[in-house]
Length: 334
Image 1 (tube, rainbow, N blue to C red):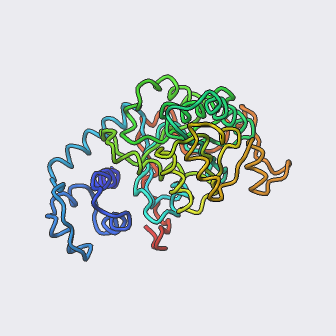
Image 2 (cartoon, rainbow, N blue to C red):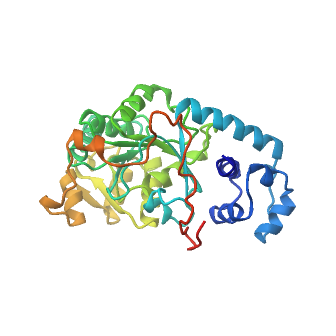
């Protein structure tokens, strides 16, 4: 519990880098040993000046207490970058989230994930395309990640769960809150199908505007490939596309929406070299998967696939915050 509290306390310190949080974990025993320090003392431990107005020890401890209550109530799990159960692709990011929170079941780390993103105001063609791609990837046993936003995100999630596939909804707030609320029922369907709701923001955090671009980097970071179905020139989906390229992910656009007046951003990506795809099979072909290599799974087998979840008796507390003996990103064992 002490290490869990420490990880939670660090998750409420966005002014610290991931590696700095790792260093503090090595040096401290619990959240109290962190919050009794002055910001000057933390600066000395990390060998750099930290300038922030957000260091309020008593407030951080209260947030940790509240977060633990919410984790229990909503069965929210937490895994840190210092655990072997942390998603391996996410660990590769230049600045990965120190802690990842989730509800439901994280997918098997050996199964590739595809992100499907786009505008909140799609055309009929774009909506149908997103839902169809979600169904197709579900049928192939490929989890689909998106942001649970209205529009393309919701249609992609819906197509995935209708076909009994695993969806990953990445939120920009604490996971006790489904945002937007209009997708609460859809979020429930995702969890019912052994999918998950995930994010880097600790329980109790609000969906602030600057959280959404950061959320988009997780959508691409969790995925092997990103498909932009339909996006205007100033769409948040283009931020996800930029992150995908920065992270070395495959970037695709949906061929059938390239003529849409709502897809000028998508068309720009295509003109800059993004590959246009029509079906989920096109994406798997680009990976070099032969027919007998496709990790297709029946609904029954998907339910048995090992992921990272909770037994019924766990009550939401996570046993995978840190792994003793696990070599972290610096190769140091915990």
